[in-house]
Image (tube, rainbow, N blue to C red; front, top):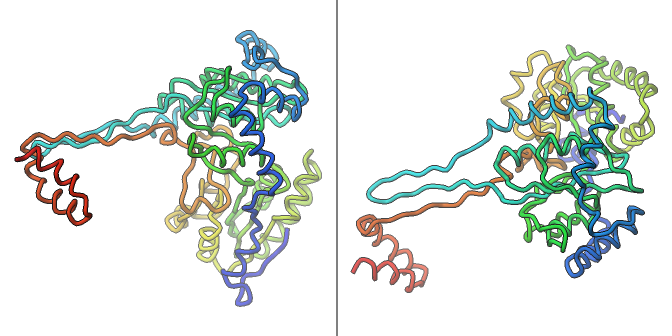
Length: 427
């Protein structure tokens, strides 16, 4: 990891460019995705089957796209009881956290005028889940359970099965989370099927869930026809640490983030130079024991950074500028730093709150804003699966109280028919 000393030669406007992020889509990717989406929109199942055969090397028929109940039953037999218990444990904690996010419809009445807001769940939601060897049952739980808590009546899941590999942990997680329909397709064709609908797969109102660059691009393109959660970039972590931090813990957390893929971003910000040396030593020792060490090494080479700062105030200011997906406060008094934190997807307080907890069993959602979007967006939540409708009810007397202001503003804007619609009711 590259060490950058923050001094007068490294003002904020310069060091931020050292945090390597890519926000562009290769032209070839977008062209391919648009071709696939257009074909799915026009041909439906036929295009989905064709591209699944081409990209995943799986020959399917329309009648075999949907996972059957007996396949889910078989999945339980293929996984260990301890795995089922772990997924159920995580599901219970995730559900419990998100139940605290629910909101209700409300209204109030004054001067014979009733105003309010109706809160309704979306009717049908699509979840994309990576499949095959790169399977993430935790993503199933994190995306499906908030939708279930919100009251979504139909939850559809698409997961690819490269070379026919249907991951049993994915199916068990989907069953525990209450997913209603599961289809064995992935890629841009799955996004298109959920967005446009096919002869077999009904279209959805919103698509959520992680995927590769083709999936992310497809979600961006179909946005507007359906809603989406976000355009997710590479995973990222910023660790702010002081002299009280345990070097083994800090090193382990940086390595765990780099493990995601070669584009993952791992950053340490600290005012302690002795800590930096100890963390580097620990990273060298620990990486050799990890099976994904090649991916970790490339991630750290590309995007791993250590910033030596003046003090913790400067560290937090830098973290706010980065607006990371995950922010760890590995300091003696994290509660004192927390009020200064403005931009982060999730904040992990103290030496024993590793980011891994948030990925799996803590309860808060692990679908978090990346690429600096924590400046203006939030983690996936129950709010993502509801819609709000304004409610207005005026009596004749209530209309009379506001009619003069309505007609004056309408006349300011040159919209006489708007004023007339009020006047005909009060004459």
